[in-house]
Image 1 (tube, helix red, strand yellow):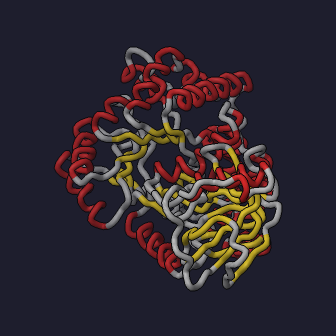
Image 2: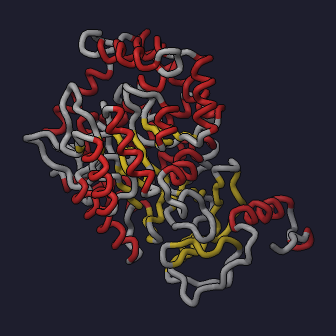
Image 3: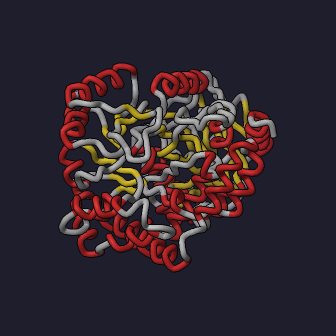
Length: 483
């Protein structure tokens, strides 16, 4: 990297921008200028979520879906040149827990991902999705369609998939996007089949017997394949980590129970009261499981093992007025019935139980972060819970902020860290050589997450979409449900 000479910069801000750009572009020699350029974003401030800083106005060149140069590109020309003076550019957001081709209730309209989930997600700046449980063949076909669009530099999200998730028999019944191996040998065969079909990782769900879980992780490990998903009532996170699973979703009783001295018994007791505890049981029982000192020790060991947790706090939160208003716009009438029921139920827990639970989850999230456990962003939302794709992730980010993470930490979790958890090495940063999946805001998102409420445009797989294009995506989703 060439030394930065003070004589080249006539002001301190310009000098600081040069230093920041050195971090964005790396220390290697800049790539040669391509003969043709698809897109140049002019005079935009680039956000570095890891450092919690942004540059002065710079130009960002995009070609064939990749960021090829960041700097002063006054002499460069492109097929499309967009003036973004005064705006901020950050990496596209990730939702690490979605179900795009999963169980659909009988008698209600099926929502097609390409016409509903994907357009809505993109319109809210969510450009990376990790599907944690869908019918395998259908989700692989959807991923292939999206990848083909991206190859053609057409706006499309980046999708990582698990296919059907591995589960035991659940007391409340199983979904059609789960598979239930009966023996360890069958579990190993199913893992091999899933991998041969082309999934990106193996997902574990609930109530898997210890010998079958061991077979799943053993088979995945032999193929150097990542195991992600739920904790199980029969073992704690450290045992799961030792088996090869280092990525966990939700803040479940299985996590908190193992902060204590008898995790398996505490988890079993929690589930024993599930149907009889009445309103507020979940919140009261979870709060009772929490032991700060034990969790601090557990989380430190998880961090040392390289573990990650995606809390999905919005799953247990009351449905916000904003979300319900959006649901009334984007859900078909038959889906709104379940949405209204969910909204009523989400408010049924006594206020004191909700407050205690919220305080507990805040402490847990802060402990996880302070210990060095990677925190990802995901929602596990569904139409039945009023969750509108993309918008529900915005609620999740605000939940994490309210839990005590700083705004830069939340944004870093939603971009760089979540991309790392998803195994997407070329996304999550605004840097040369990275995918051009980017979000534009009017105001500085490092100062306030409310900047994401006024997204002015996105670049999805190298294709620029302005404010009118984002409106068109939402109109497309409405059309898909007959609104």
